[in-house]
Image (cartoon, rainbow, N blue to C red; front, side, top):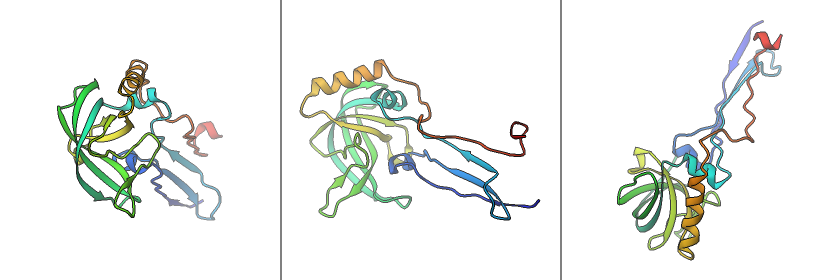
Length: 192
């Protein structure tokens, strides 16, 4: 029986993950008679539900003060764009970040000129404010990409304690347990 191979690529990760180079995709091998797919392949993104997950994935984590917005770049992959910010590292918590960094993050541009977050723990970095940020390397965005950002203005001690605890209990990167990464191939020995 002839099979027509149909490959579908779906970028379903949040803009932050898409831009950072992580992607979720599915490919389907469908028979020519439009029957059900015979093979399904998938790839899961890392889990990011807990602080410990985030701490395990981030290369560096630091308390920073945002000096200025460097630029906003429209991204073609998904809605929104990338905001590049210049920050001063006040206290490194994980890794050895440089004293000052230019880092990118995914944001949604507001009609009034501001920026909105794309996820709850992904605050847009605003000049003059302090944040705990976790970054991953990405040379497209100078010193890296923001994996998470949480406010540290109101209670610096609590914010630092929260992320120090998460770093001490960090979990190595692993696929999101909610991802159903199944491979089905009826021609395989296991399916017979």
